[in-house]
Structure formats: structure tokens, C-alpha cells
Length: 64
Image (cartoon, rainbow, N blue to C red; front, side, top):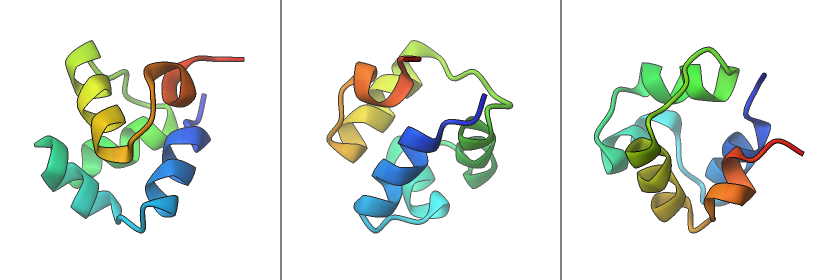
């Protein structure tokens, strides 16, 4: 399942996949795969992404 919430939050912050990847310490490909729903990130990576995007875990990773 695609993570459009994460992608939208990243775009709202005016960050590229590469910029977000550098902030959280992963590759651009990892961010791309998370957004495509092809990679399940660890809790610590989810928390880092949430901090970088000023969102909560629920806002970015909770399925409705």
C-alpha cells in the first residue's frame, strides 16, 4: 500500500526524497520504496521521518 501521506508531508515541507533521506540517514531509494509501499521501515526510521516532517506516527503510518 502506497504511503501517500508521507509523500504529501514531504512535499509540504518542500523536501526531495534525497533531502529527506539525508536528514534521516538512509538512501533516497529507501524513501522512494517506503512511499511506494514496497519497504516496511523500522520503528526508529518511522520516528526519524516523523520528526523530520513534523508529523506524528499516526499521521504518517496509521492505516485508516
